[in-house]
Image 1 (cartoon, rainbow, N blue to C red):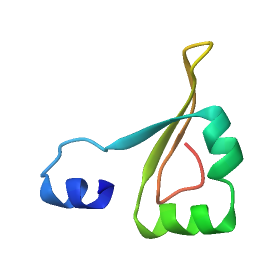
Image 2 (cartoon, one colour; image 1 turned 30 degrees about the vertical axis):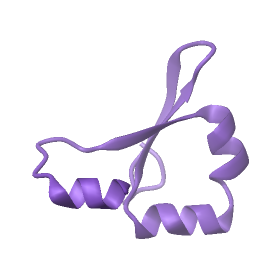
Image 3 (cartoon, rainbow, N blue to C red; image 1 turned 60 degrees about the vertical axis):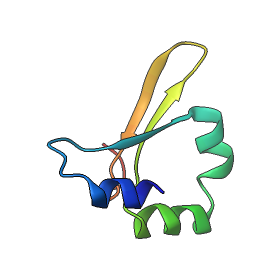
Image 4 (cartoon, one colour; image 1 turned 45 degrees about the horizontal axis):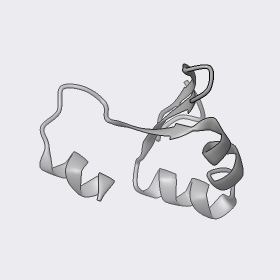
Length: 65
């Protein structure tokens, strides 16, 4: 769905999928998850929901930003 939304829009900004840090650490670090993120060009915003802070911005075309 993410890819279709991005492709259907003419955006003047990058779209990021926000996910909690524990989900990123536990589910998004597998080789399969990393492959899917790259293939579908998903940018991530990883945040700590308890401290209410952004931990990292991850661009699909770079390792981390």
